[in-house]
Length: 188
Image 1: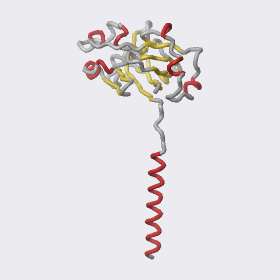
Image 2: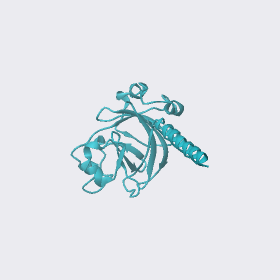
Image 3: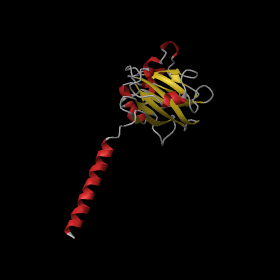
Image 4: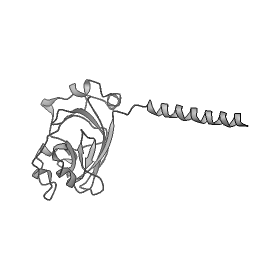
């Protein structure tokens, strides 16, 4: 009976060790998925730090201005649901003393539309070491916002701090209380 108990304990310990090793072997995906809310969305934070992969609401974004690379906003007809950065010069969309147009530190992220340049399948096959993430960005045709976003739109972007990335729009909800979900990868 003791041998049987020792056998069970050995088997249990061995499985635990193998399970622990199996978990250690998994590599974190280089793709990050985030949802940002538009200016009147009180449930989903609307500001993003690419460097920290962290979201902020308007209040905490104001207190962390140097960290903010991208935010979501809505302007009916003109931009609809869009992504921009504090340095984009957008005015009259956010209200109050913490609106990005009143910030002292305004970093600019620029977006290059990849329509006809990169497919969704090509995007999904990227890894963070792929030089394409940086070389596909075209500064001459990049803008301070990515507007009228729709599912499967692809944009290359470059932050003020020279971080290059590519994003793919997964879903969009229009309106001032709307949101955009996207997946992105940055060049390491």
